[in-house]
Amino acid sequence: MELLLFLFILKLCSSASTIAPPTQTTTPSPYQPNWNSLDKRLLPEWFDKVKVGIFIHWGVYSVPSISSEWFWIDWKGNPSPNKKAQELINKFMKRNYKPGFTYQDFAKDFTAEFYNATEWVEIIKKSGAKYVVLTSKHHEGFALWPSDYSYSWNSMDVGPQRDIIGELRQAVLKDGSIRFGLYHSLYEWFHPLYISDKKNNFTTQNFVNNKIFPEMKELVLHYKPDIFWSDGEWEAGSEYWRSEEFLSWLYDESPVKDTVVVNDRWGHDTLCKHGGYFTCSDRYNPGTLQAHKWENAMSLDKNSWGFVRTSRAKDYLYASELIATLIKTVACGGNILINVGPTKDGIIAPIFEERLTQLGQWLKVNGEAIYESYPWEVCQNDTTTPDIWYTSKDNATTVYTLMLHWPHNNVLYLACPEISRSSSLTMLGVDDEKLQATVTAKKMLKISLPDKVKVKTDWAWTIKITNVKIP
Image (cartoon, rainbow, N blue to C red):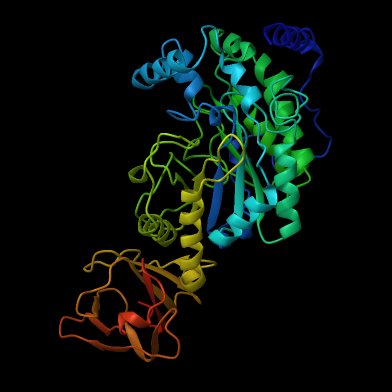
């Protein structure tokens, strides 16, 4: 393995001087390779409408499946970014593996024998999600496709000997109801070219020019993702990563230039500032309306993005917690990207499937308040009643009141909405029953709720109010 890696790097370095950046055309393209120009691109409309996506973290780290997807750097980092994890991993390796066992040795056991892309798509559909983002390559550098830039460290050369990305993309396209996206890590913990550039204080770009830049183009040209989810940006600026140059090509010349959306992880200078939609941090959920479109990338396992065999029930979000997170996210203008980590053999664990199915059951009843909705600018969260969140449609004349808890006496008080004589109040999932509402002396809207036995869901409930007065 080490000899093959050495020969591959030698080949890259010897050809570095022959690789030039893309030539400029005589006619200026609409998006120039600078943030001032790139940030003017409008986000394709489809992304804001769909609201719900599924994130999938899968790689060689799914083989040991303890600690987290940062297993390799936690184990072999010098220093380790997580000393507690390093101690745990060292004990695990000493008990279960022979001396000299390397991280690369795990790759042969990344077997994926039960990986069925069609079954994955069925699970995603049941969740109610409208897009999926698969990790094409995490910080370990292992590629889930037969990459020309990841010799002997990809899913075709070692392990499954399959094009993981290609199979999922084909299943998604066959289904036709889900958008396909790819996560891609800019940096790789132990790649020699990256380590060399880092030692040079990122004044050289051998890693980017010979690995990352052509690799990103390869992904776009081969798989045509509607989402390109970048990560691993934090150690160097966007100029080192050639991010502006790549995005200019992506927006102007790529086969997905009209539909693709990207995030904000393109350099340590870009997070929550530049790019398409903002992620700002993992599990970002500000709780207030944001001026820029954003996404809450979060995980059902509270402690890890990759599959962890030692996780217990308490480590996973309950359905009520997941739905509450979705509601708060959408009410404040965000999309939610819900992560699951498959096992090394390609199974989405039953606890993940159960949570996603429960989400889908809830969305079948309450999806009208989520999909293609907009934040209600008057209130995102009710000013007096806790755990009440709002979305809107029809130019804010239709308001959806999402309750995270059912009031004990079946009476709900709201401070934000003002109704008119033509207003109608109903509960989603309770057919043909109008709710009675009055205005109290303190100008609170008092709503009498239906008998709870008539309600189809157990976790959160939606009251639809039409012809709301616009302040």
